[in-house]
Image (cartoon, rainbow, N blue to C red; front, side, top):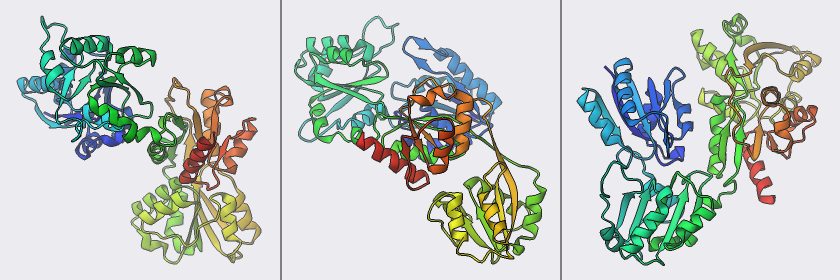
Length: 495
């Protein structure tokens, strides 16, 4: 018998997941997730984890609550670690109490992992504190959508209208006019500050403020739809002074990341920190070449090599995995020099216990040649573990200088088996290698790129774009992920 973990996924921003919640996502055998749980959190799940969507939107239910309850029990009988991933906090209008009670009735062990509720996080991201010494000493959370089966409302409207400083209504966008009317009828000043926030904590966040009397009209004019929350109280006035989230340089921009999944997280996180709404579009599947007799043989005679050149983080990962599998560790490299292509590759080498001996000025194959030009090449052996299909400029240079370069393909890049559908049109599409360009066009065609803003990690990638008659609008001057993000920010600020 397994255990069910009712995990609060937080209000939307995936970085607001708790440490315990993330730990369980990584361990889960099965994850049953909601509409409001950010799906990027599923990227932390094990590759073999079962993912089940049971999302409920207004008037559209993937599964009824009764069926979700039954599913939790079923999965607990089949799996050891079952995560029920719920938007916000499981026990604040999340029906977590109902699910927990059903698990008890069926003899299933469970654990509750609280989440950051949208009731406090969304106002904070809009620059609105729920309490403030000069404005509000009390706050209340109210459902904006009661059970339709109730004969009468359980909400104490008179007490709320007259006895609580800050009111936070969850799931009430469709009932905004009725909420406004009831509050005013029960005595709330029609000129009280009010606010509606859609998609709070995400870069698509939209905020509308005004008086309670007109907030429903203003929200309708702005096209506000669920999911969203409603705030009523004098603290809303503090937004003009305390708003911070929308000031991020890429706020509101949809930026596509086209890297392999295991490499896309860092770029996605850096873009998110700048305020971007990141869209992950996998264009590459990285597969280790196994078995790899040539690599094993090279590792056995590793002391023969004067220098090992790493042109990607993938090459580093596969090489050191093979090194350890062959019963060796970093001591086996002995006096071999180590030359990475850029900062990301160097960082991964350092994490494996190797401090690079050199660092190219430009993070390209030509940059590596710039380092080699300062070496004595003749009569020396070099090892180059790399992708199966890669440029041969480094190999050619070493041979021309009288050296020997053993090129060993250690991984190959292929098209993903299940590419995503391009439902959302990105404002900016990033490319971090020539293969991401070629694969993207193979999967989605060239037309998608013609009206989009294209961001390239460097000149080699830009040249590949030009082969398809596509010009990069943005090109990083530092050819790594940090440089690409900086270039996007500079371009956005200018335009």
